[in-house]
Image (tube, rainbow, N blue to C red; front, side):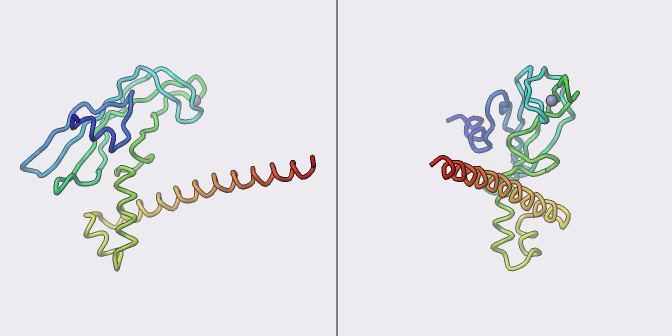
Length: 170
Ligand SMILES: [Zn+2]
């Protein structure tokens, strides 16, 4: 398997996103992964409508899980689409949450380490994070948990309503 393909699967990068290059910096012990958006249209993050591509936002960087002992970073010029209703909007990226400088996989791993470590301080040092980064990762994890719970509640409510309807019918 090609290295690009391997990372693509690990990161959940699918067309129209594409891994353009993987640059191994031996001296810096660093892997730089460049991702490109190859489509000329994309979904509006507000309403999901397919819209034409507007422009590429400036290059953004995310820290990913290390590859062996190499720190691993993602780079992408994230495009904006022009929605008829919502104007120019940055498309949602599949590998990281909005406004995060870390990939979702990194954040999930960081939460595991935070849970397993004896103290936040110890976890922070193991992960190479500062206090603000750690707090932001924790806050986003709580928000994702709340969003998941909301979905489950709606599903639960749905099945309750269904049962209630059934009882009325029979
Ligand atoms: Zn829209």
